[in-house]
Image (tube, rainbow, N blue to C red):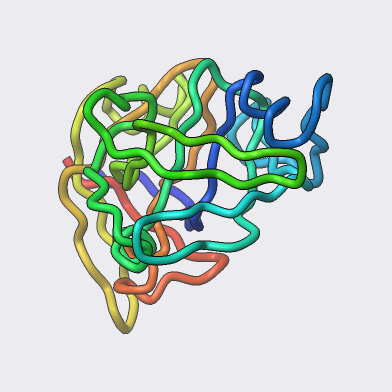
Length: 190
């Protein structure tokens, strides 16, 4: 049995804590939503910052909301290498032992001692969707992408729960390797 899921390509972005939002954008600043994302309650913001590494700077990188308890920067491996950061592949929120960087906003700067990751590829599913697919939260599955540059990706983490909606998240390096576009889908293999 296979279960089809739309692919969402995740470009470089960051999630900010309330404290860092205020440092970068000014006291009392609230994030400005520009577009709702597939995952319930999450949105792309008008706000952008520069991410500074030892070798280079990524300019105008989009902030995603809402605010998080801890600031997290998600880059593709190509982006991390370009700015001189050796970022580990990690599940979102697992930031212990990760490298840091400098963030520059219109009102201030933040020097992070950790928080930069390459996001572990993952599939979001609601509880009902996970049951349909025959998987559960924290399972690790493979996904198959058909097409001219079709691939099978192993080590895809299942993130299931009431705050999730059916979508696979690959970063731009992974999506480009498989020739993914805006309407790409994959199937979960068990």
